[in-house]
Structures are given as C-alpha cells and as structure tokens.
Image 1 (tube, rainbow over the protein chains, first blue to last red):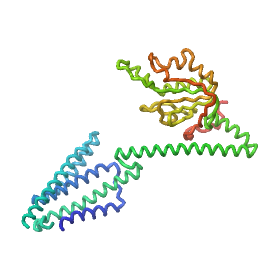
Image 2 (cartoon, chains in turn orange, red):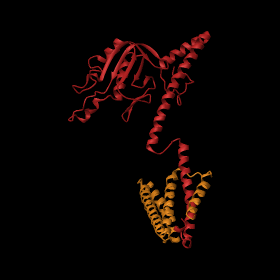
Image 3 (cartoon, rainbow over the protein chains, first blue to last red):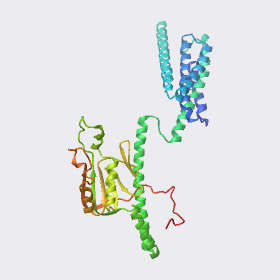
Image 4 (spheres, chains in turn brown, red):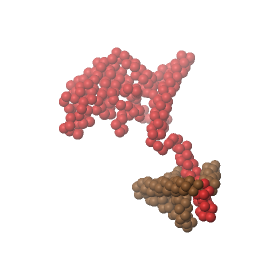
Length: 119
Length: 261
C-alpha cells in the first residue's frame, strides 16, 4: 500500500514535533499557519501531478519553497501596511487545495471504473 | 490500490513522503502555537461564538465575586462588633471606626429620604426633530450626576443608584460616566430605568428638586415630553447598601507630618 507511506510520514512528523517543547513566538502564529497551508497545497498538488504522470521534482521543490515564502512574505507585507493580504493567500491556496483534491478524486474514480470494466 | 501506482513511475511518491513528513511537522508546530496562545492568555478560542460564551461565563464569575465581597464585608462587620463588645478600650476605637466607615459609605444604612426615578421617555422621536435635541429622550450620565449633586447639596447623607440588577452606593470615589451607551457607576455597567435613593431630610430634598427653576422643572426643554422621565417620591424608610466594590489605595497613603493643621 504505497499510498499510505506519505500519510504515515505525516503522522510521524506530527508526533515528533508535537512532543517537543517547541515554542514559536505568538506573533508568528499566523505566518506559521499560512506556511502549513502552503505546504499542504504543495503536497496535494504534487500528488495530483504524480497521478497525471506530470510530476517533476524541480517544479515540486521550487513550488513548495517559493510558494511558502511568498505567501508568508505577502502576509507580512499586509501586516505592515494593515491590509489583510493574509486572506488573499488563504483564499488562493485554499482554493487550489480544493481543486486539486477534486481532480485526485476524479482520477481515482476513473481508474476504479476502468478496473471494473477490465475485470 | 497498487494498480493506481504503477511501480515503475513511483519515484515521486518518495519525495511526496518526505514533504509529508515536513508538512506533519509544520502542522504540529502550528497547532502547538495556537494551543500556547490559548493557554497562556486564558482566551479559550479565537472564534466569536466561543468568545461570547467566555464573556457570559466571566459575567457570572463577576456576579459571584461581587456577592462574595458583600459577604466578606458583612463578616468583617461582625468581627468588629465582636471586638467592640469584648473590650472597653476597643469600644472607643470601634466607635470611631464605625463613624468613619459610615461616612465613607462602607456600612449599609437606612432612614427616611426620597426616591428619584429616571427613565427614558419611551416616546417616538419625531422625524423633524432637531438632532441637537434627540438626546433629550433618554437618560444620560449627566442626569444622574445632576440629581446626585442636588441631593448632596441639600443634606442627603447616603445615596445609592439602583437599576434592575445593581444597587451601587455613591461614595467619595464614585464616578458616574457614560461609555458607549452604558452608564458606569463605580465602574459597574447599569442601564435605565434608574432609581436614586437618598437618605436625608425628605421634605427638603423633595422641595429642592421640585422648586421653581429646580432640577425637575428644567429637566428637559422639549414640550410634551413624557413627564414621568423624572419623578421624586418621599419615603419613610429606605435601605441603602454598603459600598461593595474593592477598596484598595495604591497611590495615597496617610500623611506622617500631620498636614497643614
């Protein structure tokens, strides 16, 4: 069950950090949440690309890093000039997460119906 | 499931796995930070509905604490009575003390006096009303201050301001002010209708309020305004509670030099 490996990795990472005495300054809380959302977007986007056989490691890596940094930088800029640019990042990234999730779902449904025909 | 991931093109899964590990760590860090914020600030949630519930809980707590203050003051009074009856030396001191406490408003008192009721007019404001005069339809902090001042000027010895849920003693450090539509008396939020109870010479107090050009006559300038907005009534026995907010001096202390005597 290869599909479970990333999931297990995520749980391992979660537990590893959750049980440390990590203390991120409270002012950074919203940036951290944004970075997490951006990370989720990159992973789900990567899965979609992988399923479509379009996965390219360089695009995935640069996308993850650049998108995360850009989202955080944009949110920081928004805080500086008192515009909630944070929301723009959340809407844009959140929208993409949903889009990619629905594409993954379609892909799996198509595969399942193809498998049924073959059988 | 395996057919979904053709093994030959599976290399991408491992990169995803690596980033899932990172994502898990980020998730944990974000969650932990939010938890830290909640526990360190005692703010239970950042959602409005949760905050509303917290506010209600705090209000309940405040109510309970206020009842406790009243209780403790009562207990304190009992101890003082016990001391004064126990020893004649203490007796003199405690008499002085009780006089001082009476003047400071720290004891509940009763006696004859007047009750002044203040309420909003309840009338509809006409559309052509001068905006400057619209405020005349409701009771303001200024009205309470005026009545209290008038009563004190005419010999009231103890005054309290009462609404439906509070009864606040007016003492030397009492403030009466308006903060965004709510009237704060002794920093406690109150709303109309108000009853101002005053112990003192009831005829004089009533007369002072009702006299020509007195407070009641010049209360509002709009004709046909509800005359019941301000009413005064003589009472043979009014009970006025003790000051029940915390009494702690942070800046003032007793002068050692004896002042300018």
